[in-house]
Length: 205
Image (spheres, rainbow, N blue to C red):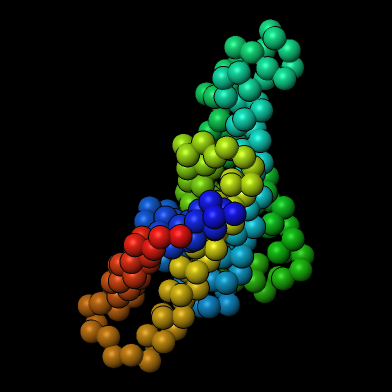
């Protein structure tokens, strides 16, 4: 249990996709102007990461890596399909994003219209693919750890974009120097939030 909790907290705060690896910055900066829209996109990212990581873990361990197909018989023990991992991961992500896009369009047209092109672009959001690649790199020993990492990474991305949106909404009423308005102050706030999130690296769970 301690291992799961430690991984969950680290994936949210210490290994945050935005503040530790700068992944998904395009959507983060473009959408984080409104809390409601940011929350909708963040929930979609949480869902995609939580679903795709365990699916890709299963594919990695039972289909793609060397010897993964040994369950089919001895003659498949030396088959190595790891060169297909990137394509397979992207295909799984694209399929899940398409499902999310159809659901959002049907049940929340207002959110669908406010997200615009950024909803289908989740399929090529580097934070989503990064989650699967980090999962592959860290070689989690079971699907539970992969799912925990996916959920934590998604929640970390959600927390980052909603926090940024809340700050940017308040900045509308602030007297910001003209040269820093817009992306300038957004980058400064992102850096400060990154420092704040990095302070959690000293936690010992």
